Length: 323
Image 1 (spheres, rainbow, N blue to C red):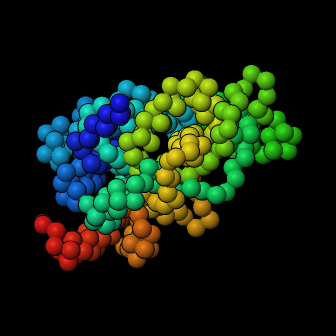
Image 2 (image 1 turned 180 degrees about the horizontal axis):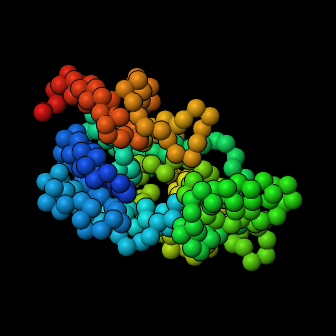
Image 3 (image 1 turned 135 degrees about the horizontal axis):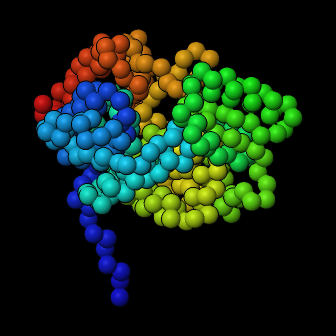
C-alpha cells in the first residue's frame, strides 16, 4: 500500500525576528516584511517584558509575539536555544514550508515574494552563509560561562579577559574570553569529562541568519533533543554560529545552499559585531543577493532605508506586483 502523501502546509513562509532593542525599528521591519510578502507569518521573539512591543501595534503590523523567559548569554548555548524555541513556536503555530531567521535590526532589501518563490523553486532546504575560516579554539577547547560574569564591571571584565587570553595562549592553560564580545566564559583544552563531538559530524561555522525548509527545521529540533549533540555544542564557543551549519551539513539528502539571508557590514579590520548600515552601502547590499541587511539603526540608516525601499518598490512595479 503506498505511503500517504504529506499534509500540505498552510503557510509558505514564516519570518522569525529575534529582537532585543529598538521596538520602533522592529515594528518598521515587520511592517515592511508584510508589505513585501502579504501571505507570510511573522513571529517576534524577545525577553524584554510585555511592554517592550505594544500588542496592538504588533498585531496591526501583522505579527505575533513570543515573549520568552529564556535568558540569553551572547556566545553561549542559550542563544541557540532561543533560536530553536522560536523555530519550534513558528512550526507549532503555522507549519510553514520555510522559515527565515533574522534580527530585529534587519531590513528587507529586495522583493521578498519573488525571493521566496526562488527558494521554493530550487527546493532549498537551507540557505546558509558559511565562514570557511577555521576557528579551532571554538571546538578544540571546552568552554563554560562564568556564573555572575554579567554582574562585573564591563571594563574590568574586558581587561581581565584580554590578559587571560594572552597568558593562556602562552602556557596552554585555561583562559577567559568575552564570547560574542559580551559574555565572560572560561575555556580549557578538551579532555576527559568534556563532551565529545558527535560521530560523523564536522564542525562548521557561519552566520546565524538563515532560511530553512520545514524538514531542515525538524532536523534541528530533533538534534536539540539528542543529549550528546546538545552537550557538545553547549561546550563550544559561540554555538549559535555552528549548530545549524554542523547539524545540517552532516545530513545526506538535504539541499544546503551557500548564500546569505542577511548581509552585514563589519568595521575595517573586523570585529565581533557588524557596523551600522549607511546609504553608501546600497550598491553592495543589492549586489549581495541577500534578502535582508543589518544592522539598521535610526537615524543613521534612515537614508539607506528610504533609498532601498524605493528601489524595491520600483522592482515590484516593473514586475506588475500590487502596491
